[in-house]
Amino acid sequence: MCGIAGFVSSAVTDSAAGQELTARMLDQIVHRGPDDRGILQVPSVGFFGGMQRLSIIDLCTGQQPVWNEDQTVAVLFNGEIYNYVELRSELISKGHVFHTGSDTEVLVHLYEEMGAAMPERLRGMFGFAILDLKKNRCLIARDHFGQKPMYWWASGQRLAFASEIKSLLVLPFVPCESDPEAFLDYVTWLRLPAPQTHFKDIFRLGPGELLDIDLAQPSAAKPTVWWKFQFAEHPQFVSMSEASAALEQALDESVRLHLRSDVPIGVMLSGGLDSRVIGGFAKQHVQTQLQTFSVEFDGEDSEGPAALESARWLGSQHHAVKVTAEDLGQTIRDVAWHLDEPVADPAAFAVLKLCRMAREHVKVLLGGEGADELFAGYAGRYQSMMSQVGRSRFLRAVSCLIPKADLTAQASRVMRARYRAGRTLNAELVECRIEGLPGGSLAQWGLTAAQLKRLSVRSQQYATQLIPNAGPILDRMQMLDVRWQLAESLLLKSDKMSMAASLELRCPFLDSGVAAVASQMPAMLRTGATGPGKLVLRDVAQRRFGVGSQIPKKGFPIPLGDWLRGPLREQCEAAILGTGSPLGSLLDATRLSELWAEFQCGAPLEVSLYSLWLYSEWAATFLYGRS
Image (cartoon, rainbow, N blue to C red; front, top):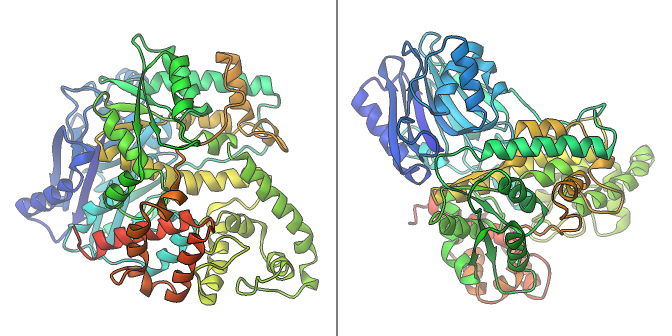
C-alpha cells in the first residue's frame, strides 16, 4: 500500500529539478506510506515520479520502483494484488524472472504479457503507473470499483498524476483553481462523479478506467474503460440455493486472499451483517485470535453494543473508540485536508478516529464496504424509488397531454407531477438521489430558481453518464450507487481516512470474483417487495454461521442534528454564515440564513449543513491557504 505521484514534461530535462519537484509531490502524501520512498525518473523521456510505501507484503525486498528483466518496463504501485501468488507462478512458468517476493513485481511481467489488457487479470485494489520505455508510453489505471483513487491533470506537453490532489497542487504549472460548476452538484448530491473534481482541470480517473499516455504527446491522453460492473441480462443463478452456494464459495476465497499479509490484520466491525460476515470468514482462516475495532458514541443509536455482541460471537480481542461532538469540531479541518475535496459523509471523522486507534494494534483492516451496493442493502430506499418512478410511468405515457413544468414551480403536487411527466426514468432516478439541497423534490431550501433549473439539466447529464438505458429498475439503481456513491463517496472516504492513519483498509466484498457472482443474480434474490435487502447474503450468513438473518443496517450513525444544534452550533454557524465564509458568494445569503433558522426549528437539514460546513473548511484550507 502506497501513495504515488509523478509527471511527464518535455520542458523538465534536468534530473535535479525533476527530482526536487517529485520530492515535493511525495512530501504531501507521506502519511500514505511512511515506511519508504522510491523515485523513478527518466529525464530523456521527461518522466519523473515516485512513491511512498506502507510495507505490507515482502517487507525486505518490496521497494519501488520495480523493473522488468531488461530495465525497459517499470511500475509505481499503490494498492494490493491479492492473487499475486497465482499470477507469479503462471508468469514464472512462462519464463519471467522475479527478483522480489512482492505483489508489485507481478505488474511489470503481466504487462509484458498482456499490455494494456493486464488489469483484467488482477484481483485487488490499485492505482498504478507503468512506464514502457520501448513503446514510449505510460499506462495509468484505477481498480475495478475505485478503491484506490487516481487524479490527473494535463495541458500543453505536460501531464501529472497522483493518488491525492494535494500532490498535484505543489507543481508550479498546475493551477489551484476551484470549479464553480462543482459546488452546486456537491451541495445537491453530496459527492461528485468521476471525472469531475472541485478543481478546474484536475480530473479523477473513474473506477475501471485507464489512461494510455504517449510520452511525446501526454496531454492527448483520454480515459478509456477497461471494466464496468453490470448485472447480466440473463442471470445464471435462478434459485436462492444456487446463488447462496456460489456467493459463499466466492466470499470464502475472497477473504482468504484478502488475509495475505506480512503484518497484523484486524476487522472493522459496525455491528451489522456485512462486517459480521467478513469477520466470520476471517476467523476460519486465521490461526490467532482476531482483533476487531468499532466506533461508539453516547446515544441509543450507537452501534457500540451491537459491535460488542459481534465481537463476542467472533471471540475476538475487541477495541472500541468513542467519538464525540468535540471530536468532530476538532478534526473537521483535518478531514477536509485529507479528503482533498469535499465528500459530505459525516462519518468520515469517526472512521479517521477508528483508524488511528486501530493503527496502534494492526497495519491492515478488513471492512464491509460494497455489500449494500452489490446485493441491494438499501432496500427501503430502493423500494421508495421504485414506487415513485412506477407512479411516474403513467405521467410519462401521457406527457404529451400535460403542460411541462420546471423545478422552480413545485409549490403543489400538481406542479411536481407536471415536472416528473417531462423527465426520463433515469433522470428521475438521479433526482431521487438528491440528499442535500434543495432538500429533495418537496422543498427549495437554500437554492435560487436559476440554480434549481440548472440542476434539472445536470440530472439528465448524470443519468446519461452513470445509468444504463435498459434493464430492470433495481439494476439501474444499484449500478448508479456502484458508480457514484460507492466509488466516489464511500470508497474515497475509506481510502483517505485510513491512509491518513497510515493504515490499509481492504474490502473483500469488492473482489472481482465476488462481483462476478453478484452480477449473475436476478433482482428477486437481492431484495423482496417489502422485506429487507441483501437476501442472498443473509442466506449465506444463516447457512455458514447460523446468524445474521435480521441484523439491521446502520453503518456509523452519529447524532449529527443534536450536535449541530448543541455543542457545535456556534462553530458551524460561523463557518456557514460568518463574514469569512466562501458560501455567501455561492448561495443566496437570505436563503442561507433561512436554511439555518429552519434547521434550528427542527427541519432535518443536518447533512446539508454539514456539507456546507465541510466545504467552507475545504475552501479555507486549499483555496485561501489557511493552515
